Amino acid sequence: MITPKQSDTEPYSARSHLCFATYTFLILTLPGWLGANPDSKRNLEDFAQLYVNEYHPPADSVKLSAVGKNRSKALAKYSIGRRLENEGKTREAIQAFREVLNLQPDASSLARKTAALMARAGQREEAQALLEKCLADNPGDSSAYISLSNYLTTYRGGGETRDRAIAVAEDALNRFPDDFSVYDHITRLYLANGKKDEARQAIKKALEQKTGDPDFWLNLGRSAIRVYPIKPDQPDTPSLLLVNEFYERALTRDRKGATAEKVADYYRATRQWEKAETIYQELIAEQTDRLDLRKNLSRVYEGLNDQDKVLETLEGIVTIDSQNGEAHQKIAQIYLKRDDRVSAVKHLRSVLRINKKGAEDYLSVAGLMVRTEPGQDLDPKVREEAIKFLNESAYLFPDNPAFPYYTARQQRALEKWGDAVKSSEKVIELAEKERPEMLDEFFYFGFAAAVERDGDIKRAEKLFRKTIELINKNQPDEDTDGQYQGFVAQTYNYLGYMWLENDMKIEQAGEMIKTAIDLDPESGAIADSMGWFHFKKGDYEAAKKDLLRAEQLIEEPDAVIFDHIGQAFFHLGDHPKAIEYLEKAVEHDPDKKEFTDRLKEYREAKPATQPADVTE
Image 1 (cartoon, rainbow, N blue to C red):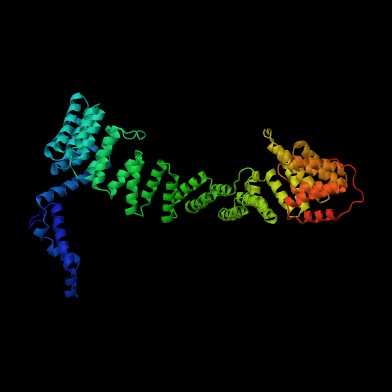
Image 2 (cartoon, rainbow, N blue to C red):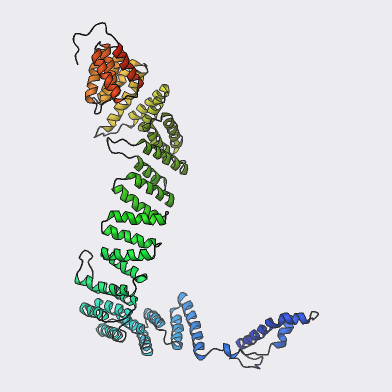
């Protein structure tokens, strides 16, 4: 403490203290002084010089006690030590920390830290002495025992030192039987030294305690698991039941708080599903907005293989938090396993909105919306919804040609030919430079078919020729299942049949269809085209032969083939057979006016002669 009436020869620090006291007074009185002397010529320097040698001691109420002075000095030294440590000046930092310990001998955690620094700096004996002194100074602090025991185990080694480490730990256990950190340390120490029986005895000693602290039992439960390893797939083993005892004691002391949650997590981790379920349900009843508890409960139901409960719990989560993408994703997976794609898609679309997924994710959902099994037809409403979704996706990814590509496919399936043409044109616009590989023979075939059905025959012909050009360019080296060859046959057949239907290039049409037959001789559709070629040429007997063969080859009844057969019989003069096949055509496609009109015509027609013999 600086005393009054110090001379100008005092050290700088003392003079600074004097000036600080004086300027404090100056700041407090300056406003009034200026107000009382508005015309005064004095400045701050004059005022400071006036009081520079005066000292005003602090009031007794703010004076530091001896303990306070020690703590202040200790904090200052500790701050210096941390700075030196950060600067890599380990030895200087150790000296600073030791000075702190001289001032605050009860700082056992700092003693442990300082000893570690000393050990790494080669001062191992001094470090041990430091911890021995800390223990002597703090016999009522369990951490002092643990620090010394840990140090002896880590840095000193050797049989005698190991025995001393164990002895110190055992002394701590006897002195602090209700301190879980002691149990944690000594069980680790026993196990590390092959003393499994001693570790088990320590755990059993813990069960003799009567403490009401739930944290004691929770922490001891974790230590017990190390000593008594649990195999989750083996319920009701002695080890499991013993460890359960710790968690059950914790639960009896706190069934609604954080302890209960940790106990439930333990039961879930050890696959004791029913016990975990009960606690989670109780917690959720008290804390209905805790989504993490509901998530954990859903995992319990997964463990119980109760998918209905899993779904119910996850649905509860998204009801509370509609933006929970993880829950939506899991719900979708459950619905997919149940083959409920409509419900799955609903939640997957929520995932897309929430998580801002990429274009591929949107395309995957779209593919899921329209996926069908072989022979299965898709509800037109589903296709309409898929088109809507694809259009929304295209808005988000305007430069991606995949969206109009798949949109066109759905539009063709719905026979929206004009829309399909526009979508295909958009594909070309987007893909021509960036993704030309999309513009392959399969794309052009679909585009050509849409254009033909939309009524532009000349443009369709050009597109089919483009398809054939790409086929000749891209023909695969191997076609083990014959699918590509079937596609090629379909292309030639489509172009040839289109010409026949429009009374164009009949001979060329025949050549196209013959090529198709060579590629796929068992196709009913191509056999029908060949029969129709003969019909257009006026060779009704050849037509009837190929058309009847087409009827045998098709897997499902086809109204167009029945109509063609009927027309062939009619031109051969066999009106009963003609009427019979037209009736089949109308039966399978009653909305087609062309068939109903032709049937009426055939029924009203009176042939001049009845054929004597008709070969079927």
